[in-house]
Image (cartoon, rainbow, N blue to C red; front, side, top):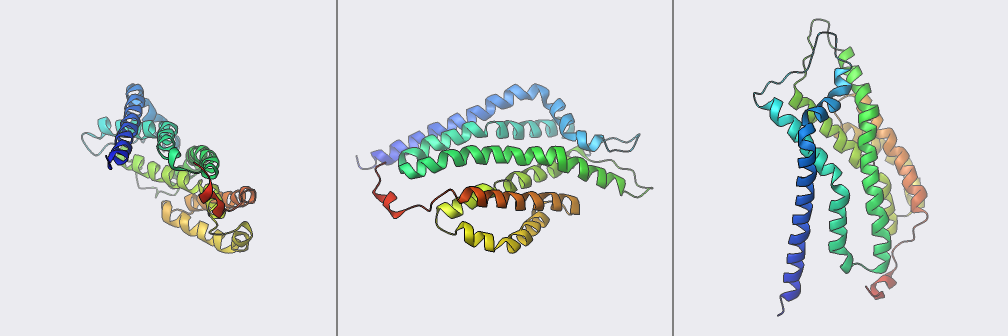
Length: 245
């Protein structure tokens, strides 16, 4: 039948998606018992800087139950990323040329490690500094009582921003490999890249100079790293169209 290949692809896609969902569910089930402990660990940078006698609060009736599980689901999704990427790779690999396969595997691995690195940097460096700054500038007659749900949303926004920003070397390598730009051309645009990094920091992070700066500077350094790595990659050649899959 003419639609058999398409049907086979759809069936394989369904199988890959079901495996991905099952992986997330399994990891979530394994972490669910520790949901409150995980949230306490996430809140540590804030709790450590709260004034004596103050604590976090829950303004919603169901927040003490649902918020830790929301965090647990996000953690399960993050931990399952390597398996999810493997399923994606297994699905698209048959349609790639050999030169593309040689590029995709290291890019998938490095992008995963960089994403985790961005989250780790945000948790161990950015959050303690930001929380210390926020709690220290509060007016003397204002009691600090942060809502647990709002804190989670704030932290997740920080994590996503830094995780994406740390993908800069991967983006640089792809630009060079695809022929969109060259390492020399990107190097000449360094001043604009630095300004752009601070602009992105202003957009992606909460409105405080600490988070913005701590995002912009790593983006700039990662841009330089991407240039160094990108010099080793040659632009994709037209001959790749003639390669056998």
